[in-house]
Length: 364
Image (tube, rainbow, N blue to C red):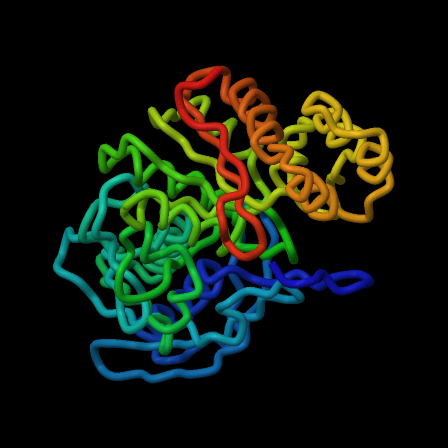
């Protein structure tokens, strides 16, 4: 996650809200011959934003409208993307049907809220689009039998920066959003991605997943285990959120992998490992060193060290297995967070990606 700017932050709109507005404009044009511009929609919590149209195209049997997504001050990969909705009439009685156009993915693995083979347009945006179609159809005495194709030009390339490939969503982006609003630098989207990753792993019968704090620990885990992509969970700083979800939706074996400082925070009981929301407890590190037989000089240096990695370097130079001890403590905390429903392993990697410490499965 990029650095949060100072000062008040501007909200934005989800891809689902943009797709809904584009759908409303396109269907209105199909019914009346005119595109409403700007087009107003009602979000699930009652807010009524208006969206200017960036593209329109009307033919006798099909209408297309496009809206440029504004994510506000959030570092959203789809900020500035063109969200297109193509609407045409369907067969009588067919209802509202959704299709994936250019840059929108297709579900290929079980475990998500959509069936395999469906366009990756999430349930909440589908509901919003269905509601605007039904409202317009009623107003014009028509049946809401339409086919909606959502496209995001360039979406396949954007999707490479998302979890979609690991979740089995291929060919492009997902159309997302439960409220229609993007809150800048919100943690909710990341945590939701962790949950969906666990859902997919469970639905595909995986017995072992690995949750990593970043790319270095992920690379280390891939050297330790030959796990499929859907078994690798990009946990980031949200160890607590992941473990609480696993408490209700368990996987038999979970490896938690991260750098020494992150795992030291978990060992101290922190569920959020972000530097702005938790800090390394040097006293805990010094206590662990004392239990390992460190000298008074080493303990004093640990208490006043600037970074956790400085303490680790001191321990390694003295031949003291501090990383193993911290991994053991972190495993105990993780077990408590998951209500002992999982077999948990902790792996600590240094900045070069080498395994620095480990609390393996099966040890108390």
